[in-house]
Image (cartoon, rainbow, N blue to C red):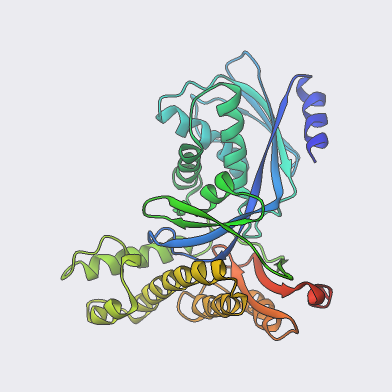
Length: 352
């Protein structure tokens, strides 16, 4: 893929480009806890977005997407482009400029093998690859943590998805053979070795497009914010994930809407599942880890309602198969992929 990106760059803009890569991510457990300032456990995957870039000395940037087979001119003093894919590049530059950087005009081609709309954070991979490429090319001095925040704010301000920090952070900080135990309220994190002892993580694409812009993702976040406001009529709680299950039951009467209560119950119980998952994974208790994955999917189905028939079919049928310890939806939901913990002797049967 890197060769393809560089060849396309040469054909369009000439020699001299440098190519950068940024991986997609899978979340093992901890869904919709990131914007509620809880814990998550993602990891980078072996598929990536590749960006080739070179300064062009002009006033207008030229960007070509291999996946969409489309080129745009980006005038950073003008309005956001009509194409959503180009808005990611535009947004990263604008967020860098908000932080005091001067980003000269450039030529760029990009593409990759992270499936689009599959819940594996192709968008975060693109934001991170563009951010890292421009940061390095123009010596802008941003840290990886700052680049993750730039990617997150690109989603908020130029795409319309009020996402948490998990995807961009996982993409920027991922390490081979490890998961990331991330506290989204502080950005403190630990790299947890994935000692799977004869098991493999298998990602299964439903091929149902996962589009957080047109889905109810932002609705779920608003429901959580409403619940927090209700709870804070009597308590001083900064984030939903600061609550334990017992504390939630004590303040349940403050949440008047039953649907909103179920959203909160998912966030709180999911956060507790992640904390337990971190512990059992470090102890090598894969059976319990799989049970927590299954419980996470049930909560996302019943309380958060972000799964749907395709994802439920993949996860629930997967859970019944020999050698499968756990299977759950991964990512924001409304389509995308499942992640399953499968005995390596049963992987082919699982795929079939």
